Length: 396
Image (cartoon, rainbow, N blue to C red; front, side):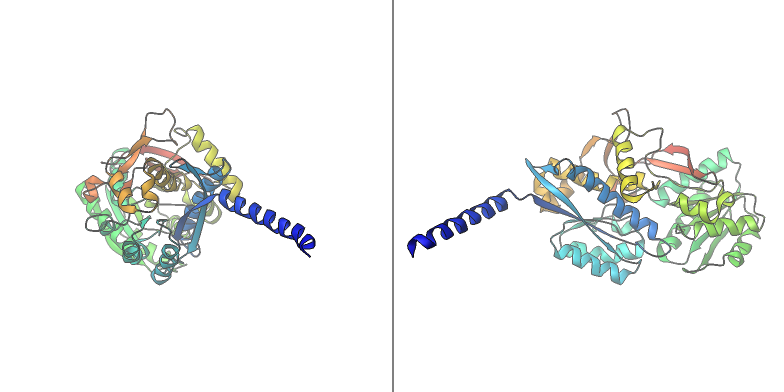
C-alpha cells in the first residue's frame, strides 16, 4: 500500500512545488483607473483618455512592465464609462477606489469631476480630471490634478492672437447649457473685455442634445461679431455649429478652448469647418520626439487611427509613473505623491531636443502646483485635418 501511494504523493508534492514557484514569480500588477465619458456627444474626450492609458500600458508591458523600486509591475488599465452623468461617475469612482486603485485619470467635465471629488478624498486617492473648475485644484482641495491647459489659460492667448493677427474687434460667446461650459463662457467674456474686445453676445446658450443649431446661431450672427467662441463645445456639436454659422453666411472666425476630433469635423462639416481653431494636442509634428512618434504608432495600432487630442492626454499616465519611479512609497500613499509634485521635474520625453521640462504647474491660477505642465498648442482645421497655428506657454 505504501509503495502504491508513494509515487502519487511524490507527483502531488512536485506539482505543488511548481505552483508555489510559479506564484512566487508571478508579476505584480499596478492598476490605473480611467473614469470618463465614453458614449454620447462628448465620447471622444473619455475614449482618448482610455486609449492613451492603454497604449502606454501596451508599450511598458511589451518591455516586461514598469520598473518601480527595483521591481517590475504589469500595468493594467481599468476604464469605466460615466456617460457624462455625475451619479454614474461617482459610482465608477467608488468601484475603482474599492479595488485599491490610487490613481484615476478623468473625469472630463466640471460636473462629473466635482461629483467624484469627495469620493477621491475619502479614499485617499488622486484623480487627473480634464475639467476646469478651480475649486478642484485650489486648497483645501487636494485630490485632483488638472490634466491639460484650462480654457481660462488658453482663452486670453487665443483672443490676443485673433486681435493682433486676424484684426478681430468684436466677439460673441455661445455655450452649451451646463455648468462647465457656462463657466468657460463667463471666463472668456472677462478675458476678452480685458483685451479691449467688444463683446456683442455674452450669455447665449443651447441645451445638451440639440441637433438643430440654426435658431441659436441666427441670434448670434445678428449681433454681427468678427469672431464666435463656442465655449465648452462637445466634439459632436462643433461641426454642426460651424456648419450652421457658414450656412447662415457668417464670414468671420470661430474657435473653442476645448479639444476637438478632426475626423468628426471632416465627416460632418468638412470645408464648412475650415479655419475653426481649438486647443490642440500638446505634441505637434514639429516638436515630436522619437518617443512621441513611437507612442503615436502604437496608438494607431491599438485604435486604428490617430486623434490629435492624444498628444495631450498621453501625459497624465507618464507623469504618474515618473513620480512613482522617483518615490515608490507613493504607490500606496498619495500624500507622498503630493509632496513630490511641488518640486518634481524631468526632461519631457515627448518633445524633441531634450531641453523641455515636464513638471507640475498651476501656481498662477491655483496657488500651488496642481496641473500637468503640457505644452499649449492651438490648432486650425483646414477642412480635412488640424494644422498647428501656434505653440505658446502658460504662466507657472
